[in-house]
Picture (cartoon, rainbow, N blue to C red):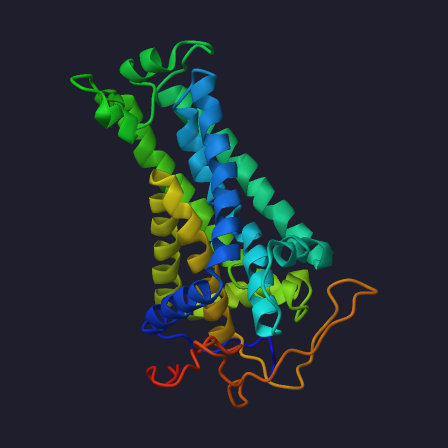
Length: 318
């Protein structure tokens, strides 16, 4: 079987991968929450910068840009998952060391995501300047919000008797058009990175074939892919609105993304892998078609993402 020939995905696979992602989170909640919490702190720190500078509306642009680089955090959670599958106790070090093992293919893809991020920041900034205007740097945050230059956040709603930023029609137009523009860019990122990042991390393809395989997977399974992309966007938005929840949402979505990838690109042993970089050794992947691994006390999840604890429902099949 050609490892870069995606298998068809069904719409009911979405529920399966979300359930598998939640089970992976349950068996290693400590490192998953720690890693998700670190990502949350970075995101919150970036979102607070515009408020301290007196230009709170820029936080909306930064929040949209975070979704464009979200796939770059996927290898961190996959590192935890791989450590668990190999029988090790997942630690934060397993996740952080993953980046050191990634080849130039992943970093080339990261550069493409970074370029799209720059496109988003530039275009959204120009769009904001034309539709809303600017706030003088150093102007008090409260004054900027009352003038209609802020984001429609919970802080605005909580202001007793104060008009919200939505009173500005220019800001409403900006949110609509920026959402459309950001949705197109986010779809492009999901198109090229959704399935190529795991392929590159496992060394099953180099950059161009991995991106091509990811594009074919999305277009070949358009309805399930669009549905999954919408779930990712809604999950990220929910995490941005309630930052503490991001520590939970990020790992569950990351594990679920890997399970969806595994359905599209199943691995049998021996697998024909390619080296992502000259000099890097590729390790054959486990036979996921073989019998599940023996359950551990309290239940476990085998490499296919199926809970092997006796008494649970039978394994799901695509």
